[in-house]
Structure formats: C-alpha cells, structure tokens
Image 1 (cartoon, rainbow, N blue to C red):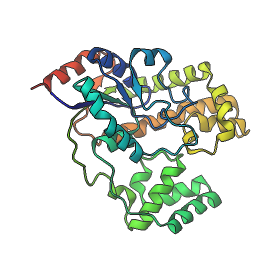
Image 2 (image 1 turned 45 degrees about the vertical axis):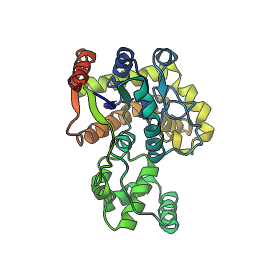
Image 3 (image 1 turned 180 degrees about the vertical axis):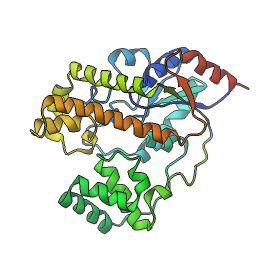
Length: 302
C-alpha cells in the first residue's frame, strides 16, 4: 500500500470526526479537514470545529485558516490539498481527509468539472434578480432551469444557486448535466468510508448536537459575527436562524428548532450526494468502526 487517501465522510453528527481522530492516532498521521465552514476562524461552535483537546491529540489542517471576509473556493481547496498531500505521505502511508463538504471532497479525489466562463453581464443579471426578487424567486428560477440540482443543493445558499443558474444560462443546458463528466487522473488511491446510522438515530444525534451548541454559547458566537452577517462565510445553518432571531423575524425557541430542522434537511442532502459514490464503504456506527477500517487498510497492502 502506498499513497493512499482515506476519506472519512458522512452526514453531519454521524461521528466521522471521532473516527478520524482515533484512526489518525493509531496510524500516526494528520487529519485534513474537508469542511467548507471549518476553514474559517471565529465560528468554532456553529461549525463543530475540532476542540483544543482534539488539536492536541492530532494535527489538523484547513481548520480556522481563513478570515471570515476571505473568499475561499473548492478550486483553491483542491490546489492547496494536492500541494499538501506529498508531505502527508512522507509522514505516513495513509493520509486522512475527513468532512462532509462533498464538493470539497469531489475536488480532491476527482477534480473539478470544466464549466463555461460566465460573462460579467450574465452574473450581474442573476445577482440583480436575487437582490430585487429575493431568495424564494431565486429558488424557483433554479427549479425551472435545473430541477435535478434544485433537489440536492442547499436552497438557502444563494451563492450556489446563483452559480448554478448563471452556468445553466451560459451553457444552455442544466448545470447538473455538466457535473461529474470528467474525472481527473490522480496519482494516489482512495478508500472512502462513512459511519452509517438508522435515520431516526441520526436525527436524534443532530438534535442533541444542536442542544450542545446552544449550551456551549452558539447565541453569543452568532452575536459577535452578526455585524458581518452579509458575508458568504456566515451563510450557514445555525447562524442564519440566529440572525433571523436577532432581526425579530422569529423567537429564540423557534430559531433553535429551525436550526435542528434545517440541519436534518442538510443531512438528507449529504446522504443523497453520498449515493453517487458506488465504492463508498458504509460502517455500522453502532459498533466499533476503527478495527473494520484498519482491516480495510490492511487489505490494501501489497
């Protein structure tokens, strides 16, 4: 076995981070985060970022490395992770990539899709439509031009909606039809695993996590960044609902309940996305997952 990337993915609150920590300690390797929000500093509670204890146990990469106003993309992530991996393999035969941001994972293992350049005029048209008509109308426009992508995108992430619409308009075909067409060659092997829970147990774990986030100070964290609420980095479940509470659009209990609901919806979308990976190994999360994963790694040895 050489130059193997172990990808540990799964829906939010499934236990993938704990599994990655245990495996990294046994293997003697670092963890590369594949979470598009843990990239940012100053929002550790809402992003369930690694704790100080986690960081003391295992070195993590791509956690808290960008300021909230710093643009960050899957393309930049792909470039930076591919540049880092050779150093990881000098340390260990296995490198661990852990997270639930599927676009980031796709970027590393398959490369990004080649999409048409979007003229400034097209982008300005879609952005102006969003500012004039709002999120609901933007969602409907996406449904009209690309119902498949509408069914699996985070509908509250207006940036992704705008991108899908503008590419669809420029290409003349749905954005989703352009995705996953060409896989770029990689000089490493990939083993992908995911903790798997019965649906109701997963949802109970999500509800419990939201409760812990609130107890740990989610509201205070949201108030600290509230003045920056227009930044794309803060367009995430947990903050959006708190911001709506601060704006007087809902009460606190409703906001907390909405966070749990929207997190469950996001988990469903992650599960849908995961079905694209036919070689994904699903691990029964109710049992020990470390030893089965180590056996899978051992089977890769020549």
